[in-house]
View 1 (cartoon, helix red, strand yellow):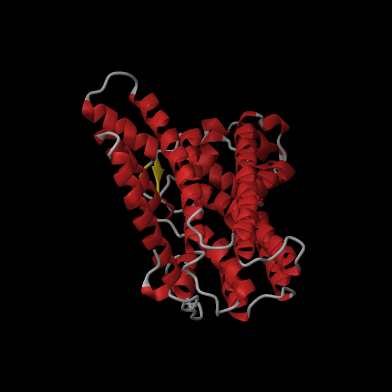
View 2: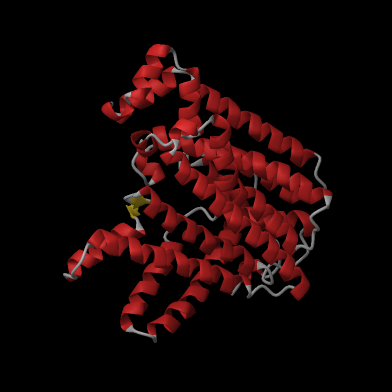
Length: 380
């Protein structure tokens, strides 16, 4: 499944370009790991082609369904999770171990990510993802175009749930293609399973928060960030990569990855909160202000309520009567945006301090330093 560029583990590493006008994380990923991203995409394409062909033998309609699931996986994305997993592995093994044996395990994280995104879009009733109709919206449109009976929206949501489920099964199946010892693969599976459990826990808390805002707090909003985002975006992928390298849970490197991963992951979600309110839809691929429109209790909104004057708090309580752009201005006026920016900077600083003390390969240290900044200072 690997291409010639990754016959070994010598992924190209170049210094990030400080003056790059593109999205910072894209620039850093391109500088540090373009060969890896290409290898992950090639691995996914090869694997998914065989899977779609197999399902098409059941029924012609299944072929179309599976192809749509494949499209959801391959339709862009930064490949952040495989990237952090790679550097978690590389930080432990150095630059001499071959990559192909662990490449399927790295690519499997992208299938897990697609499962989470497709289900999340259904739960949030999101219309677009990466500038395209979300999976449930696309299938609802297919329902209408085909002239089927029944509720198109309900059909789209039901099929999207199945697409997500299929991606979860595909992730398990691709992970099994990693050619490491059975004992090591069992440890990797334990880390992978914990990542999945924590992701679902964080997602449940996210859903609960939207329906129980009276009992929500900044601490609970940060807990959502920790489990919904930090765990499966940075912390667990790093530890997963370390497991692939044979690093035990009590190793100092695992402890450093945990501190780094939680800090960067939380900062990543805090940046998401800001982008959800103030991001450019052309860059994010999603409408601006969705979280504000629904009153989702993000850390940003919880801080705004804590910092607001009585008059501002009264205005926030009438959020549903206000235009999103005016609400965004009101939140900024409370000082919440500046506070979130400081929280991001503090977490990046903590992550880099954890990395400084870690027994990590020098090249991996350079890449993880760049990724900590890029992942938390981005436009999409």
